Length: 222
Image (cartoon, rainbow, N blue to C red):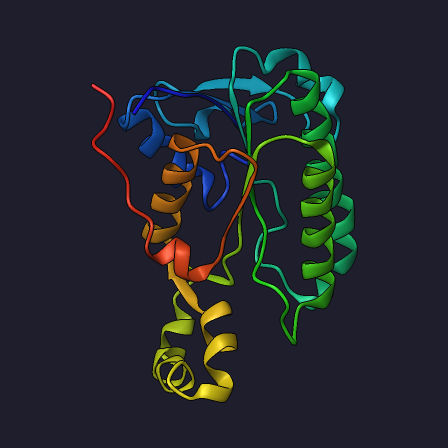
């Protein structure tokens, strides 16, 4: 495994604050985009890039020499009531990130989307699907991860649903949907992101819930 130069947006969020230390521990060089005043929230050895994720002109010139772009910006605790925020933050940030990545000839774009189709969270899914479409149209090599709900600190109540998922995954008529909209742990998600970053695809790779659960990583770079 070779060391990657990684540029992360959303680095102080739920996924970013766990992913960045993992990448650094594994021997990768990480720069993270943060708002002024949030630099102290980044882990040691991660270089802070001050800028606005909703305006590529504030950070595009500071992406180099990255070869990998990881887009993690998103409205926290998504709910149907946040449809307007999804379009103003999630969609705008991925649009700006894709444009900035193209300007910098990024080799591999990594995007956390959401499992789809699904009977709920229509606005959220629509925005993430638009983000995926932007990435596909860009022509960049990319990995798109599609979790449904990530279990971890502050996100534990769905553990109560595990027995229901167990049953639905074993009923032929509901098995596919239960697996597609299954739960993944924070540890599984971070491992899947690390695997994706360390193994760029030749084109577009989509990792659903099953692929996220089964992700493995090699020994760290020494």
